[in-house]
Image (cartoon, rainbow, N blue to C red):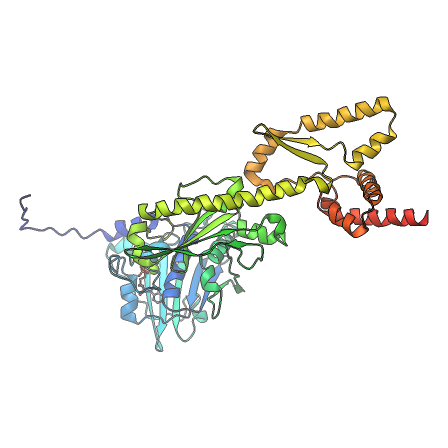
Length: 498
Ligand SMILES: Nc1ncnc2c1ncn2[C@@H]1O[C@H](COP(=O)(O)OP(=O)(O)O)[C@@H](O)[C@H]1O
Ligand SMILES: [Mg+2]
């Protein structure tokens, strides 16, 4: 191709007002914006990062204060420049930044006025980008205020560190510029919603020795480990490493405990999050210790009810940003084809494991020696559930009926079994399986079942401990165990006094 020579050039400096407004709309949410500011603090070596929101005043603000190394005035001015770095340059390993845009674009996505005050070696400097000021003057010039003792949040800045202050929160007030109470309510709710995101995204920094302390409105946030590693019932597979030209990718799969194995429901809900477990399964992609993406299988398999306990940690070094197409917001990525193939194998293995956890439970609940109310019958590629008419609760009662009524009784039971609402159950199972619970039975029904079961088992000369262990595992006893135990005790007492 012949070389085209250009001997003239024309000035094409972007219009400040237009471009800086454009920076606002690259798709940040409040969650990803705050996370990006926190990334900078972590890179600056912060141990404590405070988020302070003032929402009831006439001029609401959000302030982030860290105790990192801070910046000199020159560094601060450079930091305020949109695009102050070359994204292709090699970054130091722990560095969470990349494009030299985050501070500005994240801030402008939420506010029209960004003030940064930084303290380093006893020197305090401040700089302000105010979009209204830029619009008016149409030039790339940050304001350097003469005094900053009145800047909101400055009292929280320690001997070194940086304060990032967002004011003119035009995007967060939900359009309620005048109704102070309504505005405060909306901003507060949005801030509260970010909490879980922060606990998750930065959990690796918040764990272990010398952890990062993230404080939201004076409350220390707890790390949220998506793999529930502290739970003894979590199954962690061995770590695997894929060696690639630009660095190593680490992979580890986890199978979360079944919700019945989680001691408290809050823990289960916590790691499931507002989206629930079904939507939270999948790969958890970390760049360094920072969670970038989660709750997706990258199109390699479906998020199904059977696999919802599977979560896979993938860790990539920041040298691979270009291959994984990590975006400015650090909230999206794509799978490089070399890794894709390897992950397919990993997925197949995990899926088998996750399915096993559920199926094993299914078998156990209907195993023969446990006196199930229902039989699970698998034959000819079909699975049927049928009430177990030999269960003592049914058999005993039938025994007490005259023969002609007995047939009618068994017919009724068979009808219940044949009209199991399979389709509805199926739909519910595919959505929120853990919300499906056995129906509560009243005291009288429970007592009848307990007494019938008890007398059969006692007649089989089983001791009471064994009987309890058997009954504790099947419904309706399992779901009403306290009442069941009480009825057992009372029944035995009556028997003994007879
Ligand atoms: N909290 C902070 N403490 C110290 N330096 C900071 C802080 N925030 C930003 N900086 C400086 O400002 C620069 C620009 O930040 P940013 O716009 O987020 O881009 P990037 O993080 O990609 O470099 C950073 O590289 C860093 O030098
Ligand atoms: Mg940054």
